[in-house]
Image (cartoon, rainbow, N blue to C red):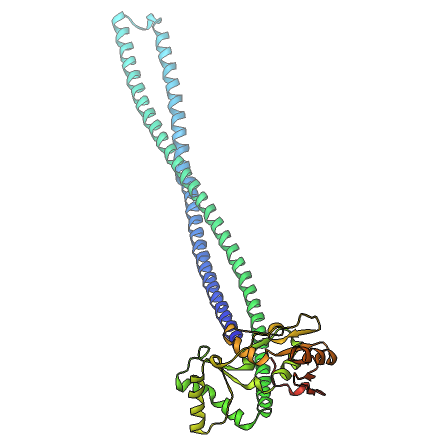
Length: 384
């Protein structure tokens, strides 16, 4: 059940991660569309700026350039006319008197000076217009460069988003494959849980067949009585002996079952008071009979185990248990040895005054009795 819960939790986390990735993809696609629209707008502005430059600014620039050329030409013509006037100074025959000549020259000078002033004024205006047009062209070029740079940045951002979207899609696909794998594992775990439940059901059925009916009834109602009496589990009530230890090696199972025998079904409690409370309920309600091992009443002898490779103390080498139930385990398995063979078991049983059991389940009692024979592995008491 815990494995199933963890798998469902992983599945939920994966689904949340996939949902976050899908949201991220949607956000990236919206950003991509927005950037695409902005790119189109920038391209239109650049196209418009180029069109303005070609249709408006460039003609004005050409016009001013032509006007400057004409002004330069007019200036040169004026200079030539001035030189011609100077040349006329020597033509005294054209004028009867010096005064008439000077008057004519003065009028020519004034006329030329006025013409030069007009031309210089026009030239300055054209030069100013040219400066303004150049400034406008430069501003237009700078704005165009800025827009081109902005376009490049946005294109780069669009490319980055495209790569992110592709990476996200790959991650999403990988997570989808991983989720499928998790679902497959979950299905396998569910199958294993179902098989384990069926196996547990068969084991409980076999378990009930191996004990007296009164004991089976009593063990069935123990959890309910413990709950109703308010007895604390793992503090006052520890459950069956067989539920409180594990094998250090699966090979020891037959020997442990033979060594413990019916003591596997004894119930460990903290004290005789707790045992009396439970037995009172069993008697009052006629719910069966149970043997209790009150930890405070168990007398444990100090034992000296043999130092030999032929035998092992079961309580120390063959089973694992919590320290809280040590007295109960010592009571059940304290005088039990695991022997290499029947002959070794008989020898050490007599020497140590302990029961010796082989891996095959042959028992040599400390009182001298021998028991053994076929053990049906299909009817084990419990899969420890």
